[in-house]
Image 1 (spheres, rainbow, N blue to C red):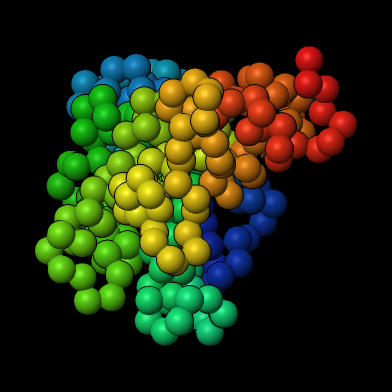
Image 2: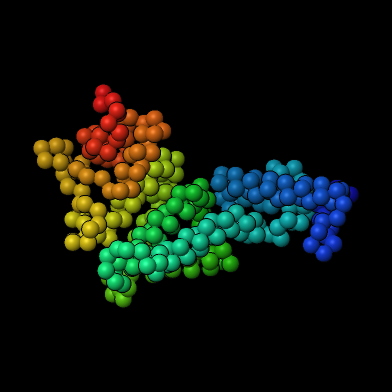
Length: 288
């Protein structure tokens, strides 16, 4: 009886493409709300117990519906995971499409194919990183029990996106070394986001991008390419403190400043000296 009532309350009736009668519209809203609650509770339980150790019955009990009601919305647990991952996969595909287009948009830059390849490379790196930052708690779930590598459409789409990202990062006519380094660069975007998921996003983003630049361009930066300046020790200063900041780090510093962080906190987050931070903050910043 309970299952029958729940199923009836969540049925959506359609005539053509239009929902009929206000009562059906109310039921549609209820079904949509139930679906959202199932996804929210599932994410919480997956995060605590792991995907593989969480049962559909546990999800149903936490949502306050019967197990058949959960199955009405999602035929199985893998379908719940697929629905949770869908926004991330969609955003990832869009970011890589924009990155690929940036290499053919005709904007001025370094000459020929090299300049186009470089634009696509960094658009792909920053695009993927931004997606990981946005969905960092879902990535943390994957680290717990590798839920996203469960065979199925979601895994295939994620795998294909990572292959495409590596292709864009490798550039035109890459050799074996370039292909390996591109795979390393793409792989290193996710782990710091998972491990430091609760850190300030601007500082985390800047630090990850700085690490990727060091991998791809070397400690001295891309020779003659107009790339970011090398991070060298400050003469007479503390060893290992960069004397310059990459564009991403400058942007992060300014965002943190606008959010109320002082130069000392910003310098600690970005791993640079206070003097380096001051050079990029508004002149009214209090040095105390």
